[in-house]
Image 1 (cartoon, rainbow, N blue to C red):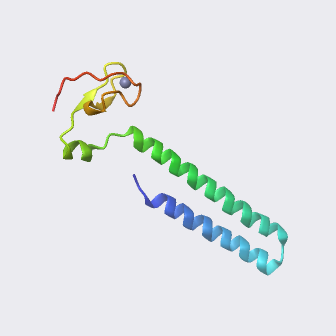
Image 2 (tube, helix red, strand yellow):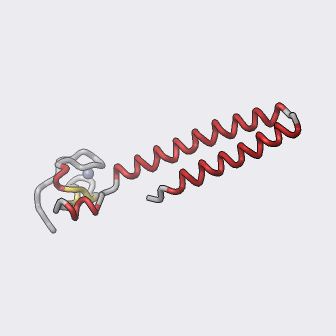
Image 3 (cartoon, protein in one colour):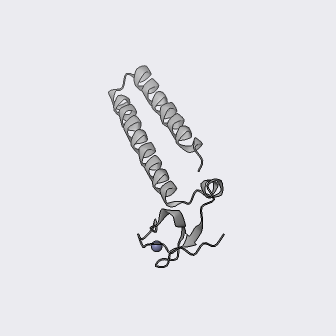
Length: 104
Ligand SMILES: [Zn+2]
C-alpha cells in the first residue's frame, strides 16, 4: 500500500491550516483562528481514520512475500473459499479451521 498518502494528507492539512492561520494573523479575525483549529483537528482525525482503514485492510491481505520466504502454503477456506495461509490454521475471514491439503 502507498505509504505516501498519509504524508501528503498531513502536508495538505498543515498548508491549509497555515494559510488559515495567516489570514487570522493578517486580518485579525478570530473566525479564522477557529477555522485553523477546526482544520487541524479534522485533518488529524481523517488521517487517523485513513491509517486505521489501511491497517485493517493490511491485516486481511496475504503477505505473499512472507509466503515465499517461509515456504508457507496457500489454501482456500472450506467455508468461505477465500484465500488463506495454511499455517495460520484458521481462516482469517470467517474463523473456519483450514484443512491441510498442501497445494504449492
Ligand atoms: Zn473462511
